[in-house]
Length: 314
Ligand code: NAD
Ligand code: AKB
Image 1 (cartoon, protein in one colour):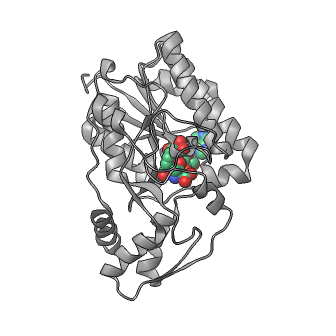
Image 2 (cartoon, rainbow, N blue to C red; image 1 turned 120 degrees about the horizontal axis):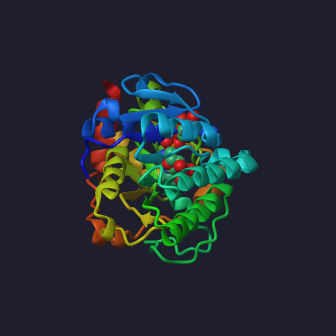
């Protein structure tokens, strides 16, 4: 792919992933080739072209695609697991309809390539929870998970029926220091660092032993850019790829933080998010991503905790 001709629209650019994704896309392409869009502007998006966009507004989306001669869309706007359970119909509408708008643009050849993230939330309580494979029982119990599972099937369908070049990853919980998480069940693993440095204490909304798949944001962004630049033929899964980084419990993370901040203390007060976490895998088998397009994570728990604390202290 020649980087010179690409014009990339990021939808939901002001969120936890979008801010870091725009920064990385601009390094690979240029600031002028990145068009950031969201419901409202964010200070981190100032270096790029910015367009106000409600992802449900198909006409406005088309107008932006034409105006900037967009070639690729990274579609990140969604309601996540915890917020989705509070606003189920809104989550369903946003997560599904906005995806159709983007896939239709690709079907009609206005754009060439689509990235759309799925999640470990596609799995449910009947899924095997250790080393969850790519292909297994999938009965998600959250609206968010149901929308992601349906979205995966639609991506596959648009690829099979209409040749749409859509690529997707089932992200685990993402942990980064540059942006705040937006309403997920794995958000504790970001909040804990801010509270550890600010107050030395953290009350966790999941229980001590709740193991979940997680990943450093740098790894997730690299995976995203790698799958989007992999040769067309190497992408053999057009639903979404399992993607694994690290798995740990809140207690294991707290112990690792204590190795740097010995006075840090944690208490546990599980809320409604515990049931969501209990329905998700503890760890993920992502051999297809490794075999098909060469995925490999860089961060382990030790490296992630050190990196988060070093950067947040600054
Ligand atoms: P986020 O909530 O931090 O950001 C979402 C952004 O979308 C926000 O800036 C919000 O303003 C914007 N948005 C909401 N409604 C919109 C609308 N109608 N039109 C345009 N923009 C709108 O979410 P995130 O963590 O950055 O996640 C991005 C994507 O990655 C989502 O699809 C999410 O499901 C997926 N994902 C995230 C994680 C994670 O741990 N962060 C894990 C798995 C999957
Ligand atoms: C959430 O907790 O909702 C997200 C996700 C794993 O999809 N972080």
